Length: 349
Ligand code: CP3
Image 1 (cartoon, rainbow, N blue to C red):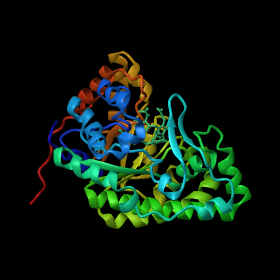
Image 2: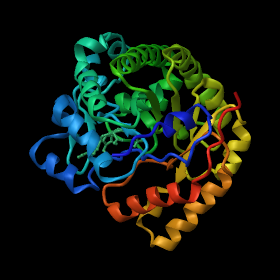
Image 3: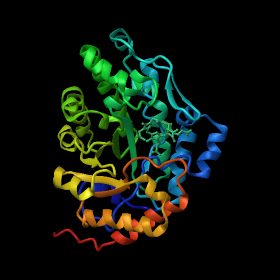
C-alpha cells in the first residue's frame, strides 16, 4: 500500500505529483479475494460485520496502487432501520419486500439514529483507518436514488412507481425526500466523525429525470443535504450517471467534486462546471475489458482533456463490473500515474 494524500489534495484543487486514481466498486466480485469471502458470507453479513467489511475494503488496496479507499457498505443499508426489509438476491440484485406505495407508508418510516442502528459502518471505518495509508471515503445514496429503490422495490429501468408518486402524490414525495435527506445527513456525519476523510453521494439513477423535474422534485433536497455536509469540513463528491443535461444544476446543489460519467467529454463537462469545482471521472467501465493499446488511448484522451489542471481525480464513469479483468484495472492505475507524473511546484513563501 502506498502512502499519499494526493487524492485529498486533488479534491481541494491543490497541485499533485500525479493524478490520483480510485474506482467506484473497487472492492467487488472481479477480485478472487472478494469472491472467496462472499462464498462464506452473504453480502449483508459482510456489510454488518466490521472485521469483514474492513478486510474487504482493504483488499484492492493491498493489490493495486490506489490513491483512496472507499468503505465497504451499500447505499441501501439505511433503509433497514427506517423499516424496510432489504435483501440482495443472487442474480437479481437488491430487493425490498415491503416497498413504499402510499403516503401512509411514508409516514410509517421510522426516524433513524445512525449511531444506534448503523454503528457497524462507523466501527468498520475505525478499523480501516488504523491500517490505511491513503485517505478513506465514506458514502451514501442520494435521496432520489434511494427513493427509487424504496418505491420500486428493485432496480428499475423506467422508474415508473417513483415518478407515479412524484407526479400523483407530491405530498408523499416531499415527505419521503425530507425523511431521506435527514437520515442521509446524519449517517454521513457519523461516518466523518468515525474517520471518513471525504464523502461521496451516489445519485446513480438521477439521470432518469428531465432537468425541469430535477429542479422541482430533487434539487431542493440536494441543496439541503450539501448545506448540511459542508460544515463537516471534508470534500464531498457529487456523483450521478446520465447527467449530461443536469450538470449545472448538480453543481448548484452542491459538492466540492462533481463526478462525470463517460457520456460527457471531460473537457466539455469541466468547461460547463467552471474552475471552482474538482472533477472526478470518467472512463467507460467497459474500457477495462479492452486490449492495452485501446486502454492507453482512452486514458490519454481523458488526461489530455484534464490538461494537468489542479482538481482532477481519475475514476470510471460508473462502478467496476463483476467480470472485469484484474489486468485492465492494474494497467489503468499504473498508466494514469505514469502519464500524469509532473513536478510539484513548491508554494511561494
Ligand atoms: O465501491 C466500493 O468498493 C464500496 C462498496 C459498494 C457497494 N455498493 C457494495 C456492493 C458501493 C459504493 C455500493 C453503492 C451502491 N449500491 C450503489 C451506487 C453505486 C452505483 O453502482 O451506482 C447502488 C445503486 C447500490 C445498490 C446495489 N447494491 C445494487 C444495484 C447491487 C447489485 C449489483 C450487482 O452487481 O449485483 C448491490 C449489491 C452490491 N453492493 C454488491 C457490492 C460489491 C455486489 C453484490 C455481491 O457481492 O454479491
